[in-house]
Image 1 (cartoon, rainbow, N blue to C red):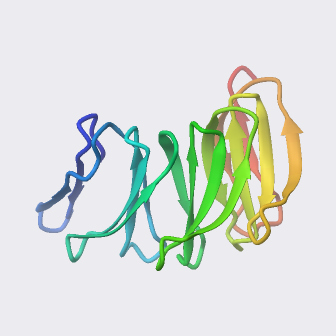
Image 2: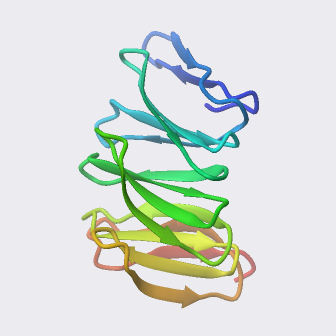
Length: 171
C-alpha cells in the first residue's frame, strides 16, 4: 500500500508482519511487482521511481522523472519496466542498471500503461481519449486508437494476439 505521506507498506499475509519503506517525499501513485515478486517499483508525486527489494529491505535504484510517476508496468521477463508520468513521457528502464532504454512522447497526460504478455507491445491511455500501442523494442508508435471517452481499464490478452482489451466510461 502506498500513502499520501510517501510511505510504502507490505504485509506478509502468512506472518502478519509489515515491511515499510519511506522513500518518497510525496504521495505514492503507482506500485508494481516484478513477475517473480522479488522487486517492487513505486512511483509518486515526488517525480521519482524507487526500485526496492522487499526481502532485503534494500533500495536498489532511485530514478528521477520530470513529473509525477502515475503508473508502472513490468516486462514479462522482469528485465525492464515502464514508467509513465504527467510530463507526457513513456520511459522504459533497464532493471539492473537503471538506465533509460527508450523514451516516447504522447500529446497529453498519460493515465495508464500495460505491457503485453510476450513483451512486444506497450499500451498507454491518455487524457486526449486515445489508446496508443508502442513497439517495446524500438519505441515506435504502432497504433493510435481514437475513443469517444476516457479509458478506465487497459490490458492485453494473455497470448498477445489481441492488442488490448478496454472498458470505457460512458460507453
